[in-house]
Length: 565
Image 1 (cartoon, rainbow, N blue to C red):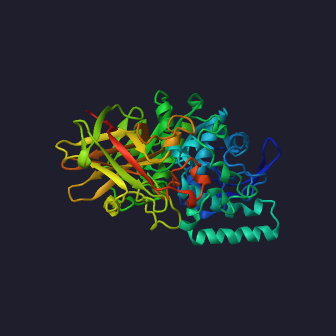
Image 2 (image 1 turned 180 degrees about the vertical axis):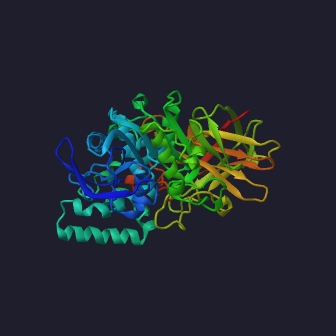
Image 3 (image 1 turned 135 degrees about the vertical axis):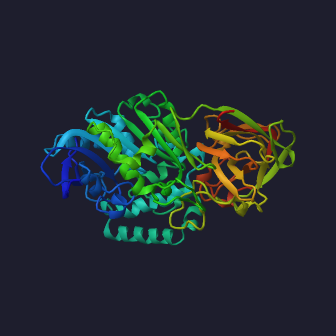
């Protein structure tokens, strides 16, 4: 253990002359140390976000690392203008060069971070700076298109409140006058006072102050069509060969960023340098030192600083200074294989050589009388979708900050929404043998509708013998975007195929349990509402919204990736 020292206000210049400010945590004794970068838009001096989520840089300094916590461009102590994530490619690479050349550095640089900070990690890896030797990206999206517009819907609940928070924190970096800033603060206070009303407003382009590009240039960008050229930027998903250093992803099944992380893991299946830790967590749950995932406490599922600190120390010990990580035995369960993943239902950890583990696809047909069967379905069923009274989000991925009671996340008993008639539910007979899945399930739905457009929101559920209906995975698809265009309308007579990809997950359905799939026309406030017109839903108003009847034909099927089938 090394006594630590902190050098506050350490500054560097980027290639275009912008000053970036950081705080340096390092051993107090003279020497050269491997460097860990932690680059944040959330204020490097904020104790909770810097030290209370993933790892305490003071503790890492005690382990013999120099840790540079740096404000992103245009945020808090750093100069320049903030350009959401796009700036991090060059700035991260410049920070790596600077850190490697300092007298307290041994020239070996690693980088770690979560959420937006995880995205900076991905940008740094993509830049392929030869001085970057290892990286850990935690719950950070590998492709903003798919995170902002999953299945073509807008990730409303989280991104709207997140954008408002970013405006609030970055207001002093804008060009607004004092009077204009005062007005923006008033608008923010109004929005945060009633968060549900804020996300209910239509059109979304009129939600102040996100309609002002001087304070939120990213706010309206995220509303672009998923097929807009705006999104066509190189990423590690499009160029996975850029991962040429030891690279670890940490992901949660119930995190809204996880689909892109699992896609990247799949594309890195043959890359021996790439690893994955996948658990049952929500976005915020990856920061929890307890094992609670919504309404359930899951054995062996604790995360947060007590878990990730030794994981980081062991990982960087191996890849920055040639150690074996054995000084951090608490990390061994997470680093003992290329892919370590949590299996819900059995609440155990498993190992695989790559993600997803080898599996066999089993089809379960949607059939009459709400049956989910492997014998083939017949008939059809219709449900109502009313934008004025949308089916509510209950559990799962939703991250409705500041008002969790309004839309609880994680594991939640789906019986709470069973009385609503604006959804279809298909349930299997009690299982005679356990069924364990790992990977991405999908629903192939054949749909007709009285409206030209629809959202198909799907939840996979484990119905326990005692009745608790545990949400396992979810996904959604907006019909108009299903075939790669913006105007693939539904027909009232001829069924259209709508494929809904669910979040990757690993889960065991035990004997005596039943498998259920639920279909609804909304999951609000997680997603924006479909107005059932040809107007882009985020740009329309409730005055033009239409109550629609969606019919699901029983040629539809749930496809499960089953292990050991």
